[in-house]
Image 1 (cartoon, rainbow, N blue to C red):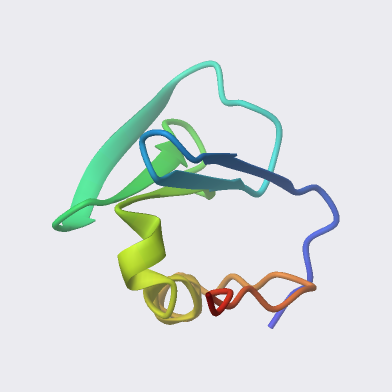
Image 2 (image 1 turned 180 degrees about the vertical axis):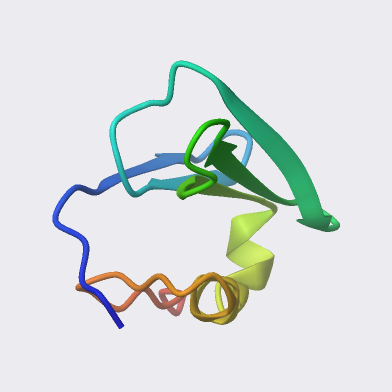
Length: 84
């Protein structure tokens, strides 16, 4: 699997939304909800995955790796839920 060099990870704690970007923001893209609360944006021209967004992320931390694997993407870090 190809390792990507450009990442941006944004988390909004108030809305519990995580967004992982794999390239610079696309000028024209399409976003689809691939499952409830999981959004994938692709560059309109190249169809490459530009970013993935997940609502209610704290409840679904484990889904991130599954979604990225299904898209042929991965992160150079592991993300896990912190225990209280």
